[in-house]
Picture 1 (cartoon, helix red, strand yellow):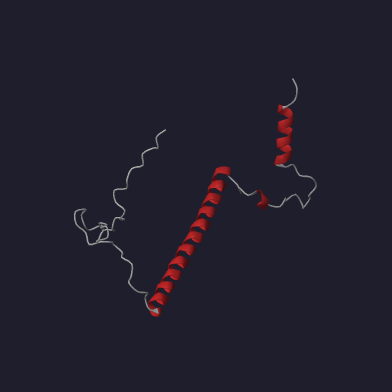
Picture 2: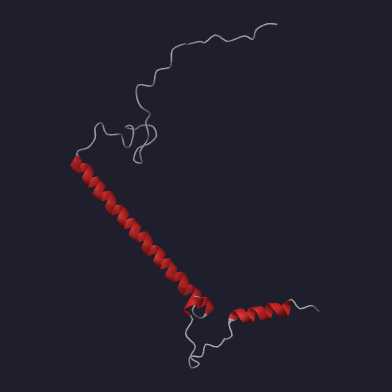
Length: 127
């Protein structure tokens, strides 16, 4: 039995990284020429005043977006409520039913649930 042939490594040295970093074209430049990374990393950390200003700006932006999101959600909720009112023709929320004006008598008024049960019983009766 012969041993499987192991190819000799051609080079034991690791390839060296390119001297220039890869070029990424920016919006105003073509693909044929460029100046490098569009947003290169800073060589040192910014001073405390700059970081404080950046942090304040970020908080203001986040607060603005958060408020806009809540405003949008509330507006959407009201819009869907109004749409439900228009489609149904009355208040779409069953928990906000108006009180009976029959002299305040709360003795077993007919509800839509009773009507549904009667309709279901009528449908499922044997022939």
